[in-house]
Length: 392
Length: 142
Image (cartoon, rainbow over all chains, first blue to last red; front, side, top):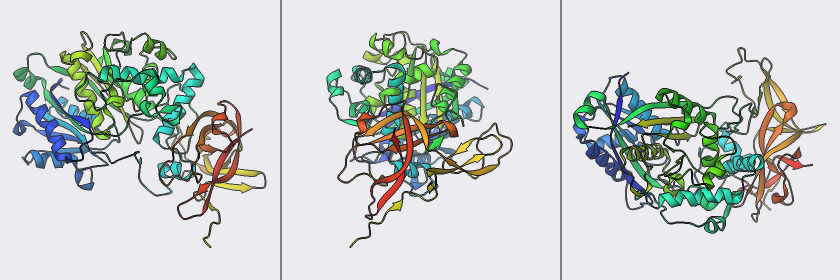
C-alpha cells in the first residue's frame, strides 16, 4: 500500500444559511480544497462523498453525484458513503483506500449538509420493526436523553459534578472563539452554561451541540503526486473504520446484554485502536485529538476509554488546562461540535481539516504548539465508528 | 364522545401474566443471550447455533442510570398532557442478564436514585395524538 497525502483542505463555515442551497455550500468547500491543493477539477480521478439523510442527493444520498454535476461531469467514478454522522470520515476511509491501493492518484472527499430545524428525528420511520421508533413511542428518549443517561452514570461512578460538565463547554468556546469557521464563537462563563436551560437532566442546552449547515472537503493524493505539488505535505498515517460489538452494553434500541467492558461506544474504541496501531503509535503519543463531542460527556469519557488518560482523570486534566491547545493532552482545538453545531455527514471532514491545519501550523490563536501527529474521530447511527491519524 | 380507551404503545412487547407484568422477548437456548424485542435469530458472533425461544423478562431490576426529560419531545413520543417532565431509566434485569430502557413511574422524577431497586409495571404514558391513552412498560422504584 502506498503513502497517502492530504494535499488540500477546504471548508464552508458552519452556521444556518437558509438563503443558500446545498450545492453552493459544497462548492465553496470543494473550490477551497482544490485551490489549497493546487489541483484542477479535471485532475480529480474519483470522488468519495458522504451521503446525506437531510439534504440533496436526489433523495437517494447521491450527494457525490450532485457535486460532480455542479463541478462538471467528467465521467469520473463516484462513491456515495452512508454511515450516519460518521459518513464524512467513512468517505475519507474509502478515498484513502483508493489512493493507497494505487487505483487513483487524486481523490476528492467531500461532505456537506443543510439541516432541518429542531431536534434530529434519528430514523424518522414509523415502523414497529425500527428500534428507534419503538424507543420514542414506548419510552420517549430523544438523543440528548441517551447522552444524559451516560452522563449521569459517569457522575455516579466518578463524582463528576455539574460544574465539571459546564467547564467542558467553557473550554470549548475559549478555543472556538478563535476559529473563523465555527458558528458559536462567543465566550461563556461557567455561570452562563449553568444558567442555560436543563434539557435532559443532567445535560443543559449549552452542553449539547445544536444542528448546523456546513461543508468540508479534502483532496487526497499519492506520494509521487504529492512530491510534485508540495514540499512538506500532511500525510494520512492511518484511516480506520469499525462497527459496534454485540456485547458493548450500549442499548441502541430498547435493550442489550450488559457489558463486561468499561467502554460504552465499542465502535469508537475499536476504530481508534485500529487507527493508532496503523500509525504505529500509542494513545499518549497524539499531539491533539478532534473527537466527536455531541455533548460535553464525550470529551470526558472518550480520552479515558482510549487510554489517553486514566479512568476518572479527565476532570482534573480539564481544570488544569491540559486539554487546551497548549496543554499536555489537547482536545478539540477547533472548538468541537459545541462551537460548530452538527452538520451531521460533514462533521468527520471538518475534524480532519482541523487536524491538517494544526499539523501545518496554520491554526492561529488556537494552534497546538509543535503539533506533529493528530487524530480525528467520529461515530454515527448504526454503530459506525471511524478514526483517522494524520502526521507531518 | 371520543374513544379514549387504552391502547398498547406497541404490539407484542409486554404482557400481564398471573404473576404480574413481564416483557416479551426471546433467548437463544445455545448461548443464553436475551433479546428485547424478540429476535428471529441469535446475533451473538460467538454463538455457533442460533436457537431462539420465547422468553419473559422482569420484574425485578436495578437502576443503572436515569435522566429527566425536561422538554416535550416531538411525536411519536407520548407524554403527559399538560406536559410535565418525566424520568427515563436504564435498568439492569440481573436475573435475565438484560439491560433495558423504560420510563420511570414516579411522583417526583428528580428524586430517583441510581443503583436502587425497581420493579416492572404497565402504566399509561399519556394520551396519543388520536386521543387514546397509551400503555407501556415502566419501572417503579421500590
